Every structure is written in C-alpha cells, then in structure tokens.
Length: 218
Length: 318
Image (cartoon, rainbow over all chains, first blue to last red; front, side):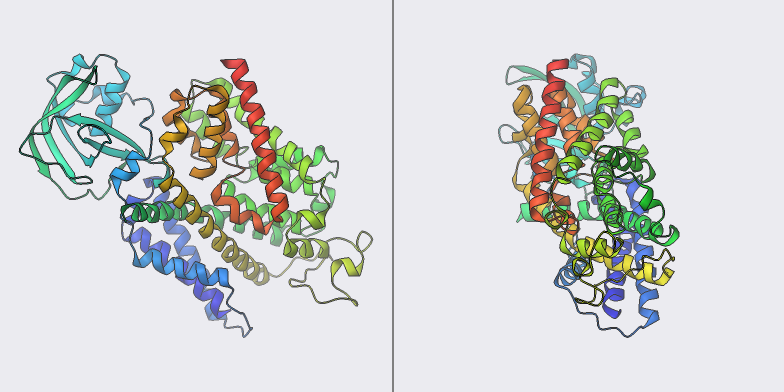
C-alpha cells in the first residue's frame, strides 16, 4: 500500500507543481490548466489517504510503476525548454479563420497572430501598407531566405502547435538569432520575394526580450 | 540537443493533457462498479452481434471524455462480463460519439454541415465494423490474460467451468477475486482497485506519449501534408498524421481546421475518424484490453475502414 500511495502522491505533486510553477503556459492551452491542477489535487489526496490507511500488504514494485515514478520525478526536475523554431519548422502554417476582432482592432494593437490572420483573409496586402506594427515573437529560421518573426498557436497542447510567421526586412546591423524573442516596432510594407508580393514588416526599433510568460496563443 | 528538448516538451504536453481524462475514465469505471450492482444491467445488455456494438456505441454519450478515458471504462465493461460487442462498440465509438467532441467539431467546422453528419456516422460504422471483426476471435485470443481471468470470474458457472475460471476447488486463486452474488463491493475496495488500475494505465500512457513525442519531433509534418491534393495519397498521409499526432478527440477538429484547406475532404474525415481509434498514445493502453494480435487486427481493420470511407467521401465531394 505504501508504494501505491507514494506513487499517487508523487504524481499528484508533479501535476500540482506543473500547475503552480507556470510551466503549463508553455505546454497547454489555458482552458486545460485548471483540469491539471484539480487532477493533481485528487491524486495527492488519494495518495495521502492510502498512506494513512497503513494496511500491511506485500505489494511489489512493478517495473511499469517504477518507470512511471522515474518519469514523474524527471518531469519535475527537467523543465520543458522546446526550440520554438524547430517546432514551427515541423508544422504547416494554417491558422483558423480570423476572428472579427482582428479587423476591428487598430493596427498597432494587433498581435503577430492577428496580423497573420488578417493578411491571410484578405488577398491584397497593399491594403495595409503603411500601417503601424507593434509585435513580439521568436525568430523562426527558414531553410531558404531570411528568418521570420513568429508565434505558435495551440488548440490543445504543444503537440498541435501551429506557427504564424511574418517576413521582416532585417536591418544589416542586426543579426537575428534563431529562437531569440524580439519586440518589433515598425510599419507594414509589401515587397516582391520569389516572384510573389508579400507583406513585410519594416522595423524601426528591434528590442530583444525575454520569452513571455505565456508564449503560446490560442 | 534542441530536438531532444523539443521532444521532451511535447511529451510533457501530451501527458499532462491526457492524465486528467485518464483519471476521469478510471473514476467513472470505479463509480459504475460501486453504485451499480454487478450482474443486473450488464446481463440485460443485448448479445446480438449487431445490436451489441450499437448499444455500446450509443453509451458513449454518457462519457464526455477522449479516448484515454474510454479504455478503463471499456475494461470495466469487459471485466464485468458485458457482451464483447458492446464493450468494443463503446471503446471505438465513444471518443467521437460524445457531446464534447460533437460540439467541438461543430465549433471548428460550422460551414461544413456534411462533416457534422459524416464524423459521428463514420465513427459509428467503424465501431460496428471493428466490433464485428474482433468478436470473430475466441476470447482467449482476443482479451489480455489478466482481463480474461477477471471476466471469467464474473460469468456464471453454467457458462464456464472451474478450470476455465482458473479458480474454485481446482486451480489457483484468481488475482482479483470478485463477487458475482450481486452485492455491492466496499467503497474502499473499489477505490483501491481503481488506484491500481490508474497507475497501471498511467505507466502505459507514459510509454505512448514518449513514442508519440519522439516520432513527432523527427517526422516533419509538412512531409505528410505535401500530398494534400492527391485523393488517395492525401487520405493515407492524414491517417498517418492522426496516428502520430495522438492529440485527443475533443480538440482534434480544431487542429484539423489548421490544414483543412490544403487537403481533400476525404482526408479531413479520415484524420478525424482514425485518430480517436488508433494512435501512438493509445498503443500501450490497448495492451490492458487486448492481445497483440487483436490490437494489430484493430489497427489494420480501422485503417482499411477509414480509407474506404475517405475514398467514398472524395468520390462524392470532389
């Protein structure tokens, strides 16, 4: 009984720690955070109640339980630190239809994801030329051509993360590093790249920033 | 090293999202065992090979969880002696035929009414097909050993001998003795067994999530979507994607929304049908229900069924 109780306690603490430490912001969409916290609490209570019962039974450690206990400990010890650029490169770009809000918001209040949704919904990028842009995101390296500034959106967890990227005319004096988080102030313009007219952000100011507490967008 | 760190993060995301649903499924299975006296409603379930999976599939409306939560409930049904068709009908249809999944499909694709009909109907047909296929196997070749022993303890001696039960005067003691007298088990016993079941399933879920995270990190998803417009290739590619991504059925419609415009309608439906039945995350969990051969039959049968449904949809809509 001690072993079963200990393992439940360990998983309960792992889930509660993940909930409390804020690391869920990096892994799951916000609507699931409470569910993880409640599950952690339930497992913790089950573990404690089994340990308090102290029935003397010979219960052997089964190897799958041992493995599960080791993984629970590793989840606590090793925080997630994904390469956002790798994640984005591995996924197709395909955001859901734009919410109406993106059209209503003034340009300088649009997030990077809202800009991408807006630009995909209207075929003529010239309509937004000259609009002010204030966005933040990570540097997403491209196999060909200059890197993009990007954000990841999730519907469920990191496994379904979908990138939204915008082209930037990087100044010669600035070398963007892959996965580096940047805040960019500038204006929107249109350039011809690979025989296509695409929207490009012309930065007036680029500031390296820390990774936001909630780097994933819905 | 970057890829390993990314795989570790995907693993944590998949696991932490799935654990609450697993606990919910185990809790419902335990609650059903405690509140409903064994040998009453289970005995009234139809044993007809076609009617049994239909009833099982419709029972999905009672459990608004994804596929991880359905495994412990299906296991409890089988262990309690429910007709196999009912348990498998539930297992394969419930991840789609439940209110949350139907609502999320509607929310993601409000402009595609055909999908709102085709997804539940396809899941229903697939569940019946797989149930009919699996019940052709004898129980001894179909069910996992521990589950088979537990199931036999719940069946009357008129159906099974003591030797087959591996219990009684002849043979050893069963690992988990159960009463078939119709008496309600003690709450503590149910809680104890549910905790053990949860930990067993959790270990298998961990393995499935490790596998899914590794494959996802090293298999670029864009390769699978590159064949988007080709009718058959797109269906096969999206089926493979559904198996690899292992995202739960309550949100897979939103994920599909991201690439729906690039693929054929048949491929879209194939993604939404196959993932809830067969994926890498489920691979370990299924071992508590079925023997490897039966799991293989499930995977192959589901893939062929989904391929046919997808092709038919492409012929109809393209």
